[in-house]
Length: 291
Image (cartoon, rainbow, N blue to C red; front, side, top):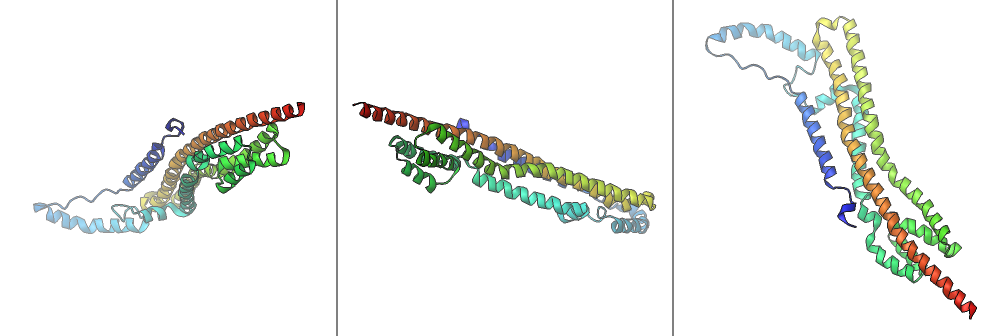
């Protein structure tokens, strides 16, 4: 297969790079401002007198919010502040990674097409050696060989009836394509569900924030920090999962559609040769009957 018919292989790398950028951006947004440097010289007395007053405020902030306790928020803190919604989002991310790896391993055009078998299949078709064709197909089960084997199975039961053979392969093609599309569509489901889960976490965090405001937390920002953090972090996590998942979905879908089209072209050529040989066989049989 010529390289012009394949999807560009740089697309997965681009998607992974986009994911890395998003993760870096999320880490950057979690940074906290560094404390001011200690004053020198004559300002020691001012520092000493200001320290006792600043300490209780810092202590109170640390009790009320995880945001004030660290200069840089760790991934675990990020996960904890996100609340209960981070667990289903974690499940979505694990499932997405599994499906991407699985699709890269299985949806390989070289494995699905098996162009290396085409010369042998063509020779056996020309010889009308249907058993040899089926043996090759069953020995290397993949998209193209399963569809062709379904057609050859119809030859053994209905003879060289080309419309019947094409009908059998069409039915097999529909079944095979549907089975291969299941894990691809699963990535799309994750890409759609993850932002909705993030939005659900946002709503949950805002409800908690308003509840704390009703309890008199308006004058205590530390009481609201975790709630607002939950609202924002879940939305961010949902988008971090959804953006690369959507990119991989379109990549796998477009690549598989091209593979299916090439499969139809290869099988079509084999069936054309089978049609020619069947016509020649019928003509030879009619000539012998005429003599």
